[in-house]
Image (cartoon, rainbow, N blue to C red; front, side, top):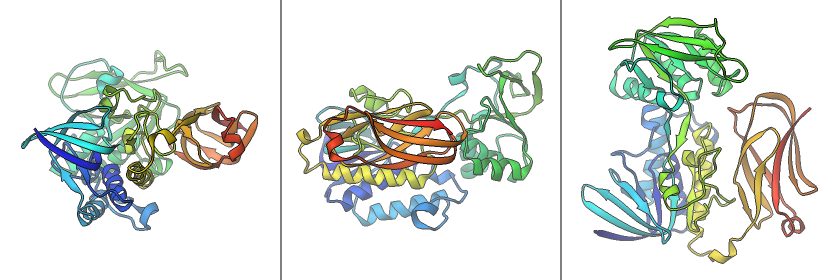
Length: 417
């Protein structure tokens, strides 16, 4: 077994892992290592050849590969060690990581760990679509890799199930490649991707969006031949008589993402049942002291810019954790979603006077009032002209010192107005 001692170990070399590692190095961590199971750095970014990355962060629009290269160069400049093609098998409560690669078995003893494992796509079997097991069924991310990395078109007549951002972007990408995109099918009464992607990827190319519809059957012997779609009611039950058959040779699935947190669960870190990510405090520290979480394994982000900003905080706090006494990190309050709010991150609050919250609402609505309440005190009141589950909301809340001492929970609510 090969042994290492490091200040900060980052598990995952995607945009979050890279940003966290660079930030940890910039904030005083001397020995930083990135472990990634892939043979490359950047995670999913190398296959995202469309632009729009980095606009909020740098003011410059970049493609995914360009954005990844920016952080890869920064990691090299800071002398960050990188272990590619390395699978992390586990880590324990002493922050000892066991990993394996071609060189053998590695034991890495870290003073802090940053979890940045990203997420994976849901498949057909996550939603149990009945029908034949014919070829021509892909997740949207796999189809994106086929086209952008390997120059392989997944089909000529394509239906997309789910209106997540990757699915919307792939609808446009397939159109560019000459495919006939027959429609995007969404079970919800609204698109689950960003509104700008609905306009730029569907409306601008006359691609139909079927809301309140889902795929009920897949037909085809060896290759997909057709899918059946049907309308659903407000309880997601199929409405008889609304079935439509669409002849196609490819079905792309954009059904949502699942944070990769098996490592965190195995060591006993508490997982939020809504986000699928670890429960963290305002330092992005999990319920295991010295272990921090960021990126899409914490929650699924809208843009890489916001993801990287939070990852930098995780890296900074992981570096600072080297000198902070564990006993000073006492949880004084829980942060809970109230009416109209699906989830809030962070979920816990250590003693401080300011906290940055990210949250998502339950449904689209206009003219709402966002409130943050601690007991009988209203700490924040903000009118929002329009909200949508696809758009993450970010707010900063100032908490008076006299409130912290008596506060048991912080509730975030959204009222209709």
